[in-house]
Length: 151
Image 1 (cartoon, one colour):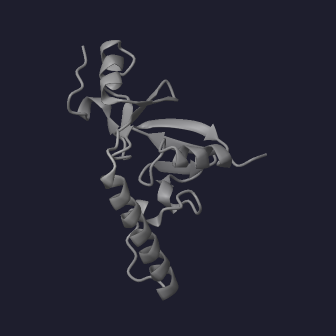
Image 2 (cartoon, rainbow, N blue to C red):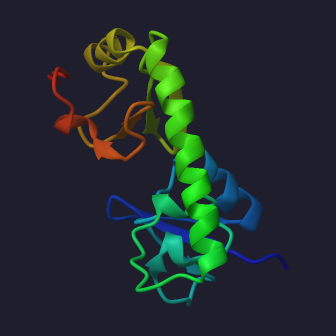
């Protein structure tokens, strides 16, 4: 039987998920390094960044390491410099911020902010739904996004 994973998102326990599904959720920002996960129904809850191989980008993790082996630090520095160079290239081009949200356990997006506002007005996007943008892939509740109004 494949490993079963559970995650706790915004106070709601979800699962079970296969390891492959959990990895895809991490890649698509449905879970973040700070979300809680557990292996099996009786496992202990841990921060998702503690699951080996779940997040490739070590800088996305909130783990604070006292010291890293020199070769690891060198690789992290190289990746950071490459990301900064890529970011400066991207800043030269006009970029469009896209938005995504989770509704009824399914991802909706990418959307423009105006489309997100329309989803609000149509009642598709609720104040408690988890929202993130391409500018800041950190989850937040829709009610905390400036410019969104709910009835």
